[in-house]
Length: 205
Image 1 (tube, rainbow, N blue to C red):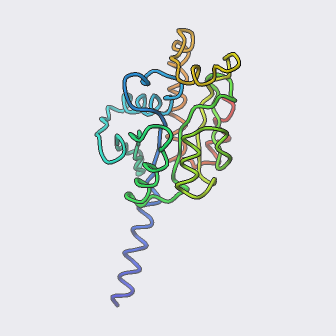
Image 2: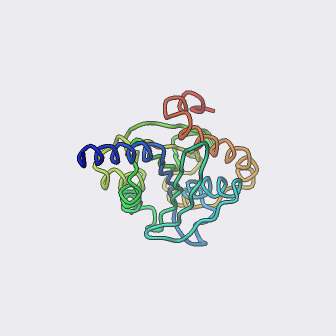
Image 3: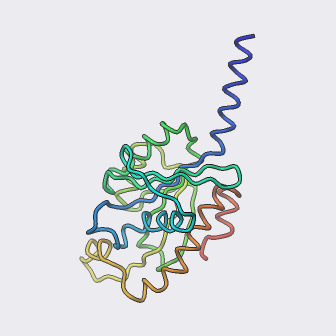
């Protein structure tokens, strides 16, 4: 009888966890990085928090906010480890919240995509991105969902670091208003409609 009750309890927990999602925006902490291209992950989560009147609280390895929508719980994480150690925070919160790997979405900037374009993928290489490299290392897999936001490659030879850590231009700032709202919808779709439907609906948009 006790064994049966235990399996029933575990099954219930699994069902609850499948409705919980970890949404990670990659970036660097501190005022110097706040409005840089590399911090688009933070910026997207901040937009969602603003829209839904959510408040981030500083906890272990990052700032956390919880968003509930139609029976789903979204744990929003902005790691405080700096970009190069993002995986440490991601693994900690996956384990702490008992969230399955398929319910993880990592948001990052991408130099290989035109400015403002969106691409959601279920796996892939780090593509030279240090935040994704560390995530791959800590999770020991490349099979995790990532949401890439294009920042373009409009920099001259040898200026990549300056460009990525540079602030948005005025033209980009004006276009970001609409792009951030679409990015927020990507997050909601991921939790409500699933990764495949989200890719079909938003990739290249």
